Image 1 (cartoon, helix red, strand yellow):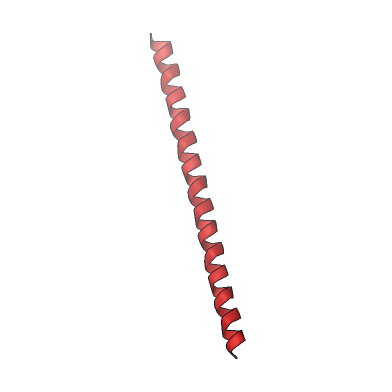
Image 2 (cartoon, rainbow, N blue to C red):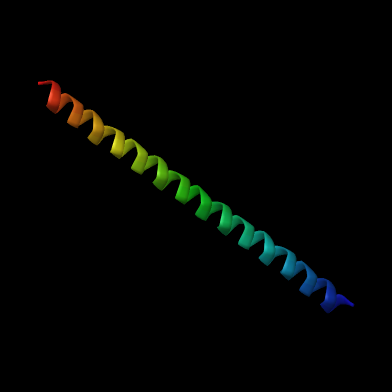
Length: 53
């Protein structure tokens, strides 16, 4: 009985860990997307300024 509870606890902890890892990965993906969006906007602005001048 005691060992079963321990394994259940371990499983619960590992599932929480995987959830955290997935959240972290999603957060990193979002950060990368935002970074790329900002960089592409900068490039577009530079092109516009280049054509205006």
